[in-house]
Length: 199
Image (cartoon, rainbow, N blue to C red):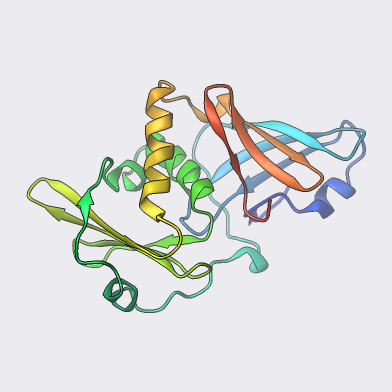
């Protein structure tokens, strides 16, 4: 049982468990989305297990903590002036509900290097790895999104949120984490697979 959280399952944990061994750990990321998973280690060194329900958070392992991203205004300055209406509001992943807690983790799988904050009413997303950024701004009862850089951050989040809605909003217990040589993916029968960071 791990007493801190990780962005992805460390291979060292699998190496220390014999076949049939159980590993309970918390996954986290730079959007501060969390999920608990109970893995069973297989004889071939792979592992799999279901996400567990509820809300839980643990301090990140030092090497998995988010880097500083600086001044959000600096990142927003380089975004295009023309935006679009967001299909989903940021409250979908920031509200104080159990569903938003779960959605934040799923969104984080889609944009694993993104960080989010709030400045006044504006919600900036920044990805220091790719240099991508997005802002969501409330405008007359809707949210306007401006995105720049090689990764359209909010567009990726919206794809996950839309797929989640189309799959009838499945709970955490319906997702399975697969850990294998060369990758880690979160899978659901009615949703596209989501790779974990480093996979």
